[in-house]
Length: 86
Image (cartoon, rainbow, N blue to C red):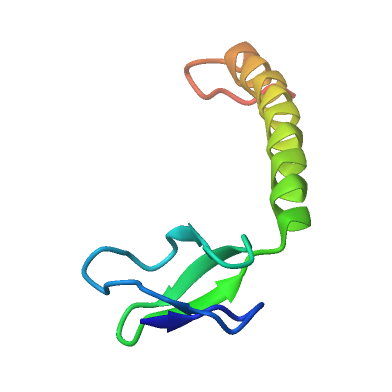
């Protein structure tokens, strides 16, 4: 049994059915909740705006990967024998 942090409703959650980090929905108020502890089961409200920000960050990561391709091109131009150019 756990309590919804948004509406204080009692939610039937078995500690053997959930893992830390799982997301569930409150049947009374519909809030998205994250399991933050298993023994005892504790829930924390998930801010939906944070999920959207994380998605935006993922797009930025894809752009950053393209930058690494340029570094690989430079390494390919280096002398394979490791000789220094002066």
